[in-house]
Amino acid sequence: TACFLHRPEGGGAAAHVLSGGDDAKLKLWDLRDTSAPAIKNLGRFDAGVTACCVHPTDPHAVLTGDYDGKLRLWDVRAAGGVRHRMLGE
Image (cartoon, rainbow, N blue to C red):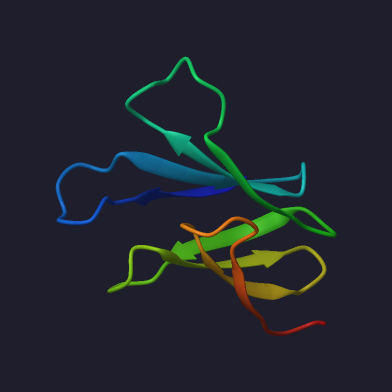
């Protein structure tokens, strides 16, 4: 699996984690309520998620990669959040 901390606007302690793995899903979790299920399922992949990275200046932009070589740029605020599909289409 791959995951990273998503920082809320204004900085401060990370409140969210994105996770991806062999279940071929990208999920957003709220660290403030560890008993709750994922607060958002951002997307379904054709293969397991192998990489996840937050943009250095835009905390809502996330780049992911999966086993079949596809890169996707996501907006974590949007339902189904894919902004762009890049390689491996």
